[in-house]
Image (cartoon, rainbow, N blue to C red; front, top):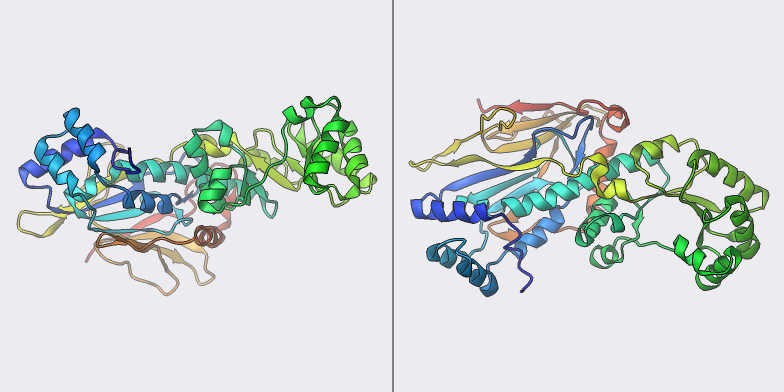
Amino acid sequence: MSGTTALLTDQYELTMLQAALARGTGQRRSVFEVFARRLPEGRRYGVVAGTGRLLQAIESFRFDDDVLAFLRETDVVDDATVEWLSEYRFTGDIWGYGEGDAYFPYSPLLVVEGTFAEAVLLETLALSILNFDSAVASAASRMTGAAGERPCIEMGSRRTHEHAAVAAARAAYIAGFESTSNLEAGRQYGVPTRGTSAHSFTLLHDSEHDAFTAQVDSLGKKTTLLVDTYDVAEAVKTGIRIAGPDLGAVRLDSGDLVSLASEVRAQLDALGATATRIVVTSDLDEHAIAALASAPVDVYGVGTSLVTGAGAPTAGLVYKLVARESDDGDMISVEKSSPGKSSRGGRKYAMRRRDPRGIARAEVLGVGHEPADDGDDRPLLRPLVRSGEIVGHEPLDAARRRHAAARAELPPTALQMSRGEPAIPTLYEESS
């Protein structure tokens, strides 16, 4: 099968399409929005990620011969719908928050404008990408915020789906991680890669001395030695004896990392290896990183907690119809009123209200119009697709820089590790 993304979707997208085409409502102009009704419990902000991947996926969202044959053979939709799908191209407009930006409850992360038939087909694709990537980026941002100036390495590939691992590394890089252990993320997205050895390499050799000698001879003195396979103090001594005081780093992957890091730092300094860094791993999350703030740690390696969203494996984003064309050709607002699943009708425009110092104070959403700018506001929606043409591609480093700037403008409470409400409120400005 070709590289189409058309079947990365739910069947009901196509059955809705079939019924709408048959009824004659499929061509009604429509506006869908992606938003989260709430942040994960206790979180103070979310981070948009996956936009670049989504744009690539939309480019490949084509119903080719293999896909059409599958739909016919399985009777998913009728022949008329299959024929319509054979010519499918999204020809509408998409706006979205810049990748790496912060978001809050009801922020319109994505605004999709087109016919119902064209736009409804993108629902599952958009949500599957944005929900996972934004969950990882939101967790990663909390971790890099807790780490401060100390770098974080993403190393969660063995704890998630093989393709999700690549997406997670990309999302973590946007949110401030310095590098990843995943080579495919390096190849696809240019994320810097890092890696040296695991415990199996030490166990392969007859002694720790032999293992360290082999690693230093092959990778050089700037390598990182894993020193907790047996006795940590003895391993540090052996490592410095082999590599000398120019050893790049030692890694601790178990035990009481706070006290152990202090002991290893004192030992390294006593051996003259004052520039040798200490890397810590072992099921770290943002709270463990914060607890290590006073310890002499130089680098954090994070795996399981990161790729699972640190307890929030999905961002909880939804894709909802908020406006559509009426029988007389006017655009009208539509909204859900279901208990606990309500939505606000009308096409939204978003601004981040800031005080004169540039600190964010509110997420302001204009319903059907641009919110009034008080002079310090920052527009949040940018064009991603215009008349079916992708216009929103950008380098990954642009999203990384955007995240750093967006997090810096949040009030200080946003970076607190304790549970709390969203850092800023979401306000609506209705049309007059």
